[in-house]
Length: 156
Image 1: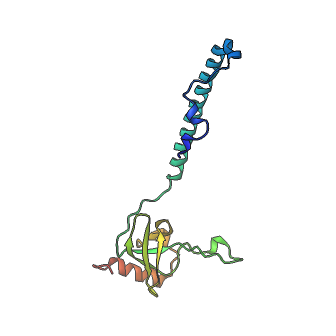
Image 2: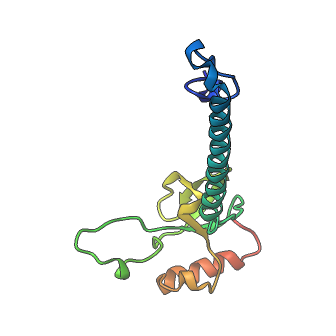
Image 3: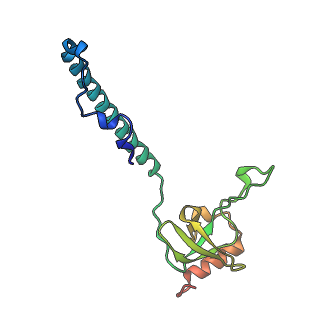
């Protein structure tokens, strides 16, 4: 059963049965029912408005990057080390990955150093772009190798 067929929702558009002892209050009951329907409609409009705002805010900073097979990416560093401060932690892991199979929201990636293969969500890695400010904390040797790989005529 769907949620709308349970509870009060099926009763919203039906006229309630009035007890014979309250027959003289039929007009007042009808007016109260109209007011309740108007309040429900206003409440539903408010819910829809807030839902649209939430969706807009959620998608505000969403990245829509497209990855292709063979792209070199760096994975976000998610390790937590007790006693370590966040400002001193590097943003990306030092070892680059290669995209083996891009998917809709994830990608099959392989670490270049030891061929470790895993599936990661696309929000957890970033395509390597030479001289990008996001990659300024990479070791010079790794950065130089990646620049050489990305400027090579053919990808891996």
